[in-house]
Amino acid sequence: MRSPVISPAWKERVASVAIWVSASLIVGVLAWILIDIFMKGFSQLSISFLRDEVEDAGRGGGIASIIASTLAILTVTLSVAVPLSLATAIALTEYTRDLTRGGRFVRRSLDVLAAVPSIVFGLFGNAFFCIALGMGYSILAGGLTLACMALPIMIRTTEQAIRSVPDEYRFAAAALGLSRTTTMFRVVLPAATPGLAAGLVLGIGRALAETAALLFTSGYVTRMPESLSDSGRALSVHIYDMAMNVPGGNTRACATATVLVLLLLFINGAAVMLMRSVGRHVPPTRSGSV
Amino acid sequence: MIHTVSLSVHYGTFTAVRNASLIVRQGSITAIVGPSGCGKSSFLNALNRMTDLIPSARITGKVSIDCCDIHDNCRSAAELRRCVGMIFQKPNPFPMSIRRNIQLALREHGTRDRTELDAITERVLRDVGLWDEVKDRLDSSALQLSGGQQQRLCIARALALQPQVLLMDEPCSALDPIASAKVESLINNLRSRYTIVIVTHNLAQARRLADDIAVFWIADGAGEIIEQGAAADIFDAPSHPTAAAYLAGTQG
Image 1 (cartoon, chains in turn red, purple):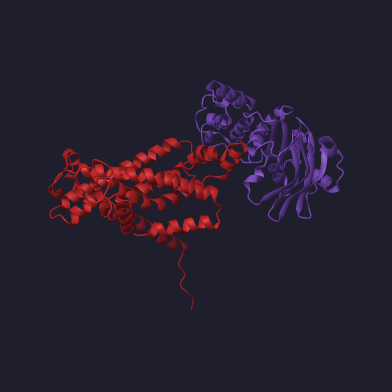
Image 2 (cartoon, rainbow over the protein chains, first blue to last red):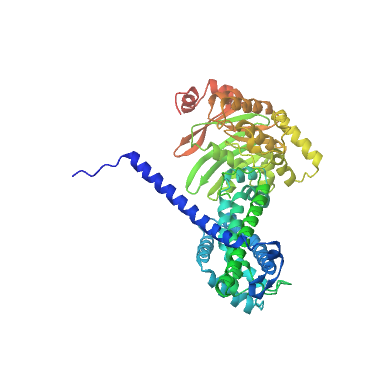
């Protein structure tokens, strides 16, 4: 018996329909989530919501202190994670050969760390930063825990970005007698900016989205933080608390989520603009870009 | 003057160049010709120690440039490469402005004064015939230039460091015929001001440019120099039969 022959035109049609359906499904889910949040949240948004302190466990007042804590935590996270990830990525690309045992070990560890659930990071942060180092529930402890969490993915994307810089630039730099440091900081890193921006955006996203790790480290005090050693509640923790623990907090949770999404878009936009201006001569197609 | 004595280049257990002894006269253009994979580029890269960048590469023999053995400690690799410029097959300007492409290495080597930097920039861009084409857009990206312009920019970038020697690895082979002709006439203009070693696949180009010729060939799995001397002599009356066949266009 002959097997039925499917005409090539049909195969094409089925394949393209399948591809378009998957793509629109993804976009559809994203749009649904955003529309749902915005529909419930926008009506609650006002200047005073952004400016006022939390009242009545979140049912009243605004979220000014929450935004301040979030930004403080993010600042701590980035000021630790960015230099560390850059340095580690440089070490991995320029100072260890691909196949040396050390480099492989570091890469393997990073991949495992990147897959560790965030609640485990939270417990570690609590045991190490809060208790062992005596920081207590604080913005500092929360920021450092998030830095540990964001580091693996930031290092790997940064490493990828540096690796994707064509060797011709390194040869040209060497032929001009440029030192290793100058080559790295004046030639390779500027050429890698599109990929570096991608790493930064992923790191920021990971930090802003995190709830579980912060519950145990920066805590959920709603007061306006006065220093990095104060406990402070992040936006994501606030959303969790409003939605799960506070009866009648649901619309407030949506309003806070709206703020979080807008903040994420704004910070990412700013990061990308910043990187673009640094690497304005870099062709956009060369490596991962945002 | 460049003088190599029994220079060999090994990559791990593979020998790319064996016992190459060559004299390059001060201010002359020496063309290195031969089929692909016969060690021409490896030989060139050994001259300014670019082979240091390849972990498995190992050099034996002697190279002296202006009577200084490059592997003695009298010069660091960076100092050596400053006075021995290199042009690559594929134009490789940095992804930054035209001005910065030229000034980056100058700054690194200690020139800080803005007016002096700009004066050098103008001088070398005039040298390569690029000034009139780019003087109004020095701050735009070097990657917007055409391939031929990029290659001339790379030559200008090398000239800015005032090298004595220029090593060129098939500088025209990635360019279209018109851009290639421009770069070739530029190289001709640099004659006698710099000592130039140029690797080329283009025998006609070698005939037009070279004062001296070295013919590389593969013997027992490694590149060797089978013929060298004044270009006119070698093109007219090559002594090595393989070289004769190659230069006559009947082999290789």
